[in-house]
Image (cartoon, rainbow, N blue to C red; front, side):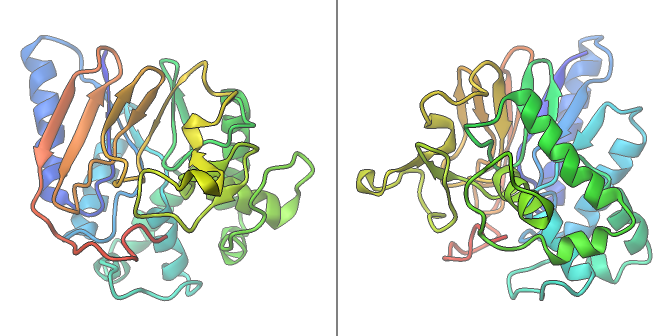
Length: 288
């Protein structure tokens, strides 16, 4: 059974269906078993049909015996926060049809049961990034802390304390809301950090930082402890598609007029769907 990972959908339902159907048809024609399909998070928001996209991935997942799943992205968490009155809807959001849907509660319940990190075939899948201090095992363990909070009885209370840019540095001694916030920010929002792992949340429109800033893409930090696995992530459309040893970046800017990309983890086959430009590039382009 092959495994395909698909980048940020962001409500682009037509392209999501087309790409998944291509994958399924290809594997069926080859006489192979149904493939595993994993999504990089940000299933919804900004694109034209967030409701249909969320319903589609939920149906795929629930009918797959565990073969199809997604990690959570910052826009997915934003939906949960808006639904509970914790964050206001922004002008660029396309999530209100979800909040007014008759199956709203079922969709939100399914969404908050999703993981923040997955390890599959020695590939570590997250939406945003992984702090250089964390090994793959530690990443999964820290993700599980947030997953437990999201799935627990006080999950709304967790969401109320989830937002903020501090602490911006990991410490094993972090506890309570600060610890969970740091984990969420790393796994769903991080792009740049310093050599000692201090996260930056200001740079959003570029793939490179000014060398004088001391910042670098999180995956370029020397001595990064997840260098022994292949990290797969989305979130960073300015970076674009990257297929490198031990690294796959999958946000190829579908909602911005780029492509929706899928990569097979077994042989690095690339499949893409071209996308019309739905959104105008603005400073809020990558916002949570």
